Image (tube, rainbow, N blue to C red; front, side, top):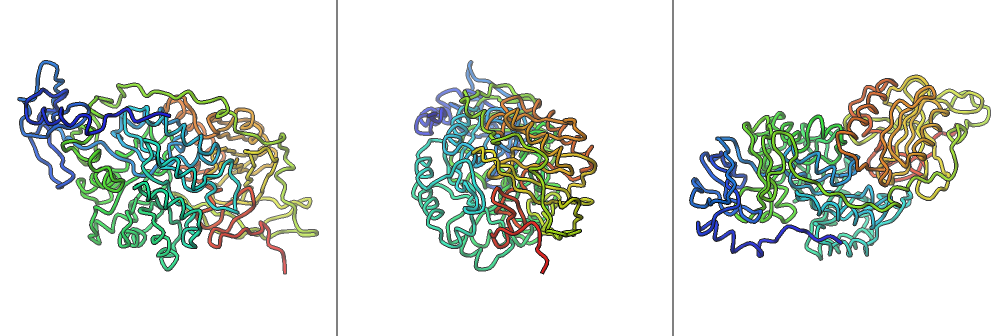
Length: 600
């Protein structure tokens, strides 16, 4: 197993002290910049940063005495020197990339620290998958900290995963060098009910002195919320309105406000700071889920920071939310999150604090990106062969596998329908009267079919239901082996023949996303590692993802980042209605319900 290659503070303290005192030359000096101090929320012009052994030795008005023949001097030229950005909650797998390729994609945007929860691969490969992600993360030139996944399955009894995570797995992982806490505790009903397994995972994390991540995806801020907070989760990123942010911070949690590819939850929550005046040190910025197209075209945490500022947040306050607040929350304030002595030398040079063009990125005392281009290598792990063989359907699927039989003699049927909500993770529980043809219930208008195809154990199981909101037209289908969180296969379509073609195609290529229309494949994103990720460069994956999005549009979909909505339709811990390998799930009551209502 890999160990963190970066030296600890005790290993280099004598050197840092000697450089700070002027007795030894620094390895690098950044000269003549505006020092953005996130501890005091100040901008201090005319400062130098002296760096030694990958850490900051001192920040002073004149570091000239600390330069020598071997010192690399970087002229800041009056630009702002800000800490490297931290993503407090994210899933690397959502980028469709391995940790190495994800790092390569985000480093030029100024992200130097990530707190990742690999619960996607945990559902497919179990503890082994988490370890592989953890080990590749530690190989990177930036800080990728791993949170041990807590919930596989996310809702026991309502879905079947490829593997289950146990309290023993959590206790074991807490000893790994790159583990900083427990990943989001999605089983919030279990915590509120005092479920022994969930509490054992939380106890193992707290015994290790590490942070418990939260996920409270319910609008109920009454006794259930109080019970969840009492159970130990220290943060939450599922808030969608100002009241959510206020409730969490009042109870001592950190409110993590996210801007991902499809989740736009900052604008509706940041008013708790900008208008209500709450202490901003309890608020943190994150992405949660960003696919490769967003990373390549728009950015990463720099995109989130710009958005928060555009929503009225003071730039220095927003910067705190993306640096020191995150570091403090995870107990790493002495390591990352600020430009102060002893911390890892993670520095961004930018000429403007509001628009944040990233001129140079320094991580651990090395220049890792300049003018938008990465300048270092991001090493790859040698992924085992079985990690590329995870899609097992049991048999080739046929159109008949996607049929929904109508009640005998019925001319129409009332169905429970999943309603997609643009730019948000929650769905709506809707009803629709649908036509019956030849004894089968058919989609109608914007209502099309959705299927959950089992892919871990080759059972051949297919669960069918209905979904609305995508706007699809014609004879089409879209299939994906990215199906949070159990990661079976989700197929959405208007034609059962096309649904079968799409599903079989993904089995053929080992996983990914495909869009079909009238018997032709319009787009394919190959994700061979666990059916979730590619180890190809981000730009190549993003180009495939762009073609996939264009294909969805060609089939009539106009939603912003509809792929993310598609991939979450099986997430049975976010209300209101979801699909799993066990059936249609009403997440408001955590009960399975029938697809069709039986006439009384």
